[in-house]
Every structure is written in C-alpha cells, then in structure tokens.
Image (tube, rainbow, N blue to C red):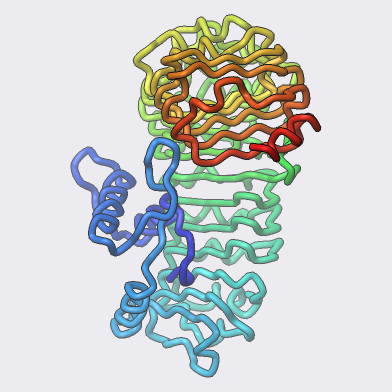
Amino acid sequence: MFPEDYLIHRKRLIRLWIAEGFIEQKGACSLEDTAESYLRELIRRSMLHVAERNSFGRVRCIRMHDLVRELAIFQSKREGFSTTYDGNNEGMLVESYSRRVAVLQCSKDILSTIDPSRLRTFITFDTSMTLSLWYSSISSKPKYLAVLDLSGLPIETIPNSIGELFNLRLLCLDDTKVKELPKSIAKLQNLQALSLEQAELVKFPQGFSNLKKLRHLMVSRLRDATNNSFRCWEAVEPFKGLWSLVELQTLFAITASEVLVAKLGNLSQLRSLTIYDVRSNFCAQLFGSLSKMCQLSRLMIRACNEDEALQLDDSTFPNSLQTLTLYGRLSEGTFMSPFFLNRENGLLRLRLGYSHLSENPVPHLSELSNLTELSLIKAYTGQELYFQAGWFLNLKDLYLKDLPHVNQIHIQEGALASLKRMGMVGLLELRHVPVGFIYLKSLKTTFFHNMHPDFKSIQKEM
C-alpha cells in the first residue's frame, strides 16, 4: 500500500500491523517485539530490504523491491485485500469490495466510490485530495475502520462523527493543521495509537483518559524549522488521568507538571518518553517515577528554559535505557551520578544540549563504553576537546555543534576506532582540522558548516 521506492519506517509499519490485528500475543513477548521478529524474517527472506539502520545496527527504514511490490498489489486486488490508487487507474472506480485503500495520487475526488461499510484501512499519500465527501459519509454507515492515516493533508478540523468509528485502532494526523480534537474522540475505546507529529494540537479534549487501550501517543508542534533554538519543539499540556493509561508504551511530547512527574511511575510499560518544561524542583520526583519504568529505552528531558538546571547528581535511570537526550543546564557533578558511573549501563546514544559545562565532559563520557552515537550541542564552554587512545571504541557517530570557544581538538591514535560519521557545526574558533584526524581510518562521512573562515580554506585542501 506504500508508494514505489517509499522509505517505510519500522515503527510505522509495526503499528499498522498491530492495528490491523495481524500480530498475536506470544507468551510474555509484547506485540511490538513479536512484530519486529516478523519484520526481521521478511528481511531475511528478501521480501523487504533494509534502507537505513541506526548507529547501533537496528533497522530504521525499509523498502520493498519493485517486483515484490507488483506481485503484492496483484495478489491484494485479486483477494480483495486492498486497492492501491495511483492515478493510473483514473478511469476506474475503486473496487467496492476492497477492505483497504491507499491513495497515492488522485486528480479528482474518488472517495464517493468507496463503500465505508467494508473499509478497514484508509491511507492517503496525496496531500492535495479533499475529504469533504468522505467526512460526510462517516456518520451514515456502519463502521469497521481500524486504520485512518490522513498525514500531510491541509486539514484543520476533525468532524465530531469520528467518535462513531468504534473499531478505530490507529489514527494518524501527522503534518496537518489540526489544532483541537472533538470531544467524541473519547468514545474510541479501541484506539491503540494516536499520532499528531508536527501538527498544531494545543490540548487534549475532556475525557481523553477514557482511552484505556492507548499504547502510543505522539504529539509535537514544530516552532523552529532550523532546529537552532532551545524551544524549537513544543509539547502539549497533560490531561487529567494521563497516568491511568497503563498500557502506554510511547508518550511524547508532554509538558511537565508537579502532579504529572509524581504519578508518571504508574506508566510502567513506557518504552519511549519525551517530557518538556522540567523544573529543578521536579527532578527528584521525576527520577523516582522513571526508576519504576523497567522497559524504558528512550528518554528525552528538556528543562523549562536555558538557565534552569536539571538536577541529576543523585539520579538513576532504568538499566534498559538505550537513548538519552538532556536539554538544559547540567552541574559538574552530573557525571558522578550513579547512572554515569555505572560501567555496565547499556546506553547507546547520548545527546547533550545547552548543558553549559565548563569542564570537558569527554573524559567522563568515555566511561560509557557502549556508546555508538554522541552529540554535544551548546554543551561545553571550554576551549579544548581531546580523545585519548582506547576511548569510544564503539562510537559510530560524533556530532559537535555550537561550541563557540573550542579552538583545539586532539585525537590520539586508537581513539574513536569505529567512527563512521563526524559532523561539526558552529565551532567558530576552530581554525584547524582536529589533530590526529588521520587516525580515523573507518571514517566515511564528514560535514562541516558555519566554521571559522580559516577552517573553510583548510577544508578545501583536504
């Protein structure tokens, strides 16, 4: 149902499978883990091929081979599983018996030809289509719709009749102009995933905590497309009873409050959490709640402003944590906390932003021997960075941005032995290529932007 050569994100595909009911529970294994094992098997059989992996080798995006896709489309139409409408079948009506419809390209309104009473899944990739006719049909016929993906459409409102789609399990409104959801959405008792990434949602409607089966809640508002400001992303205010949605695995981005951080520990199934506007006096309770999340693998914390300190001196994170992003001022004692001193923690990706550290953090971070990705963004106010032999042996990606006083970088032979990608942006005082740059034998990609003029001239000679 995806366009030809389309980059399919792993998480998106897995959520679609689960919403459709294709994945069955296997013992204590979660539906998401079972689905991922199926994905690996499809890749092993060359039904899908990996287009992109993250720094520690996990599949990020996949593609379907053109020939396999054509065969799948043919078989799907024959069995009434789905119809892919790509504009080439403009003169044809969408088969009324199709249970799933994907609109890849459309120059006229085809929605009047679809029988909503049979439809299980509707996904559109054409951002120019109009949905007015289909909206009016929502409240007029029985509904079995499980997946509704309207990403990218220039829609601002969702009709109140959305509440009649009682079988809806996945609702995706990414990249839309939706600012509010109707109160009737609280009727969607089977909803498992709601996504409004890069939309305009400000708050949740009353009664939202009734959605007890919700597993993934993803909401974000982009305020600075350049990604250069502290508050380039905005979160949504928490709703009353959020902490009662005990099946939640994904939650972002949510604004911190005193009540929320105290009760967040109820969400013990969380695997991914992004929380903004954290105040110093919230930190103790926040980390107390985080310690109860034994499956948490991805965490992002942003302070309420650039000057607010994140108090991490006595912090402990779950041992399951793989990705950590901290935006806000850090004390020098942060790296003496139990988490950073634990040599056996499984942290793979670390991103520090606006930390304002006067002491070089690299020696402390080198103790995190499993790291495959490290980003320092306005994190260090000193002049020198050095990487000694034996440090960061597993690191694949190193990204340094807006370190305005750094004028020297030293790399000893034997450091950063696995580094594949290095990026430097806004190191305005760095005039020379890092000393020891020639030792980075595994390096494949470099990019330098907004550097000192002398550095640019050196770069041309490299």
